[in-house]
Length: 509
Image (cartoon, rainbow, N blue to C red):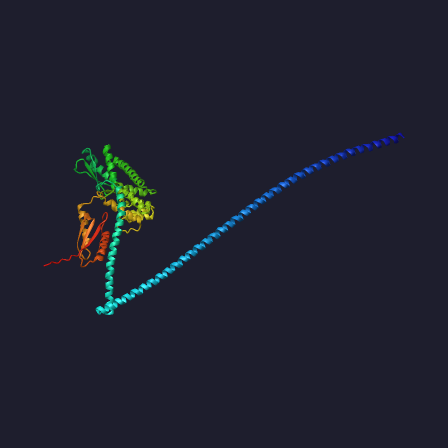
């Protein structure tokens, strides 16, 4: 019995324990479920908030895209409107031009009709004149026509002579006024000294004993000096001087400097001579380069190749008709730049060409040909612009000037040469030029006599009035001037004055 009671108690206790455990477990499950539900609600609220934010951003972006599309559409509409306006304007302009063409066509038609009417009127007049001539002079139709043509030709010739003379007078007055201002202003800025043209240089000695030291034993020193410099050294009886002779002015300058250094140093022997000559060559080379650079810088010409500057610098030691060629070129470049600016020509090209127009004179003893042809060739060789080479090449009359810049270079060269005191010309050359002017004038037919006056600046030609009429006199003056231009070299200009004089003399008894 007790055993049964103990078993019942044990069973009851076990049932009570299981019930308590089930309650605790059930409570825990309910708590977890509530926590999960709260968490789910929070996540749902967060997701809903994020969804609202994304929807707002999408709406904002959609509004932006819509606004951009509207703006693009408005811009396209504006462009289309502008295009339409331009097309309308172009169409209006075309219509206007068509109207103008129509009006011009009408005017041309009216002019053609007027010309045709004038032709008919002239034809009627000629017929009437022929009939009148036939009646008066009893001439045939062919003879009357020839007579009428002669009368017409005579009338036209007289009118043409008067018109040519009038136009020449007007052009001369206008040209003289403009040219006088330009040339006077240009020449006002020119001033340079005159040096005698020479191919020799003298070196002064302080002591006559130096001649023997320069000659050396058995002439070794002077031979070494001549061999090193390429210059003839003449030691004669002239007291206190040694003469250096050479057609190359640069070599002559090298010899002069070398000789002066030897005289100053006092040590004269073949080894020392070679050393001093080399030093003098370097000094002259520096002076040549510096002279070329200074000249280009002075006139404002930049970007010139070094080879051309070197050739330009050599002109420092070159003279022509008593003018230093480098100074002549520099002053010409200043004047040419001013004239080019006034005339609307290319100032840079004009200055460039003028500065290098006589560059060939530095090479005439080395190359065959005229100096202006050599100048053009050298400018092309070292990459100067073609217009510069042409202007330099055409500054003399044997080559026709094809550009305004070439004409300016030619004019400036003539002005520089014609300036009083610019050149030294012997009396023999002057007399030959005067005689040549008269011979050129006398070479034409119908000339009675001619005189070269005003130091060769004018040729006065008297013609035979029986052979030369007024129109022929104008043509003759032009022909003589053209012949002088093509066959002579002269500074400045030469005036050709053709005089036709008719005298009627009668005696009353």
